[in-house]
Length: 116
Image (cartoon, rainbow, N blue to C red; front, side):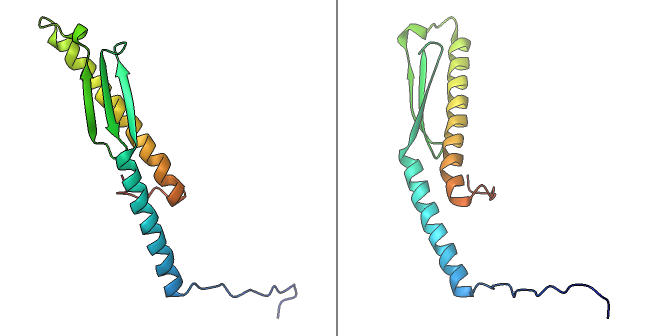
């Protein structure tokens, strides 16, 4: 037998299947509530000095697009298209950030794929 100190190992606490199932069920319910709340939360983005304003939910659903009549120029449709594209893309980015903030509080930043 080799000389040296022996360390007693503590037996690891093995969670019971019922405990795990309860925790999973609780997390699923909290996630469902968070998803429902994101349906009501919105982000609003204005571009071009307020020429185009977009409102999007936390679930990345477009609620509204408002276009100032001053920006409508039949000879420069491309500029209006660019403004709409910029507003929608920024709103989408902010909406995804909102959802990530709300859901990461539940998942502890685990980065679970498919949640958003």
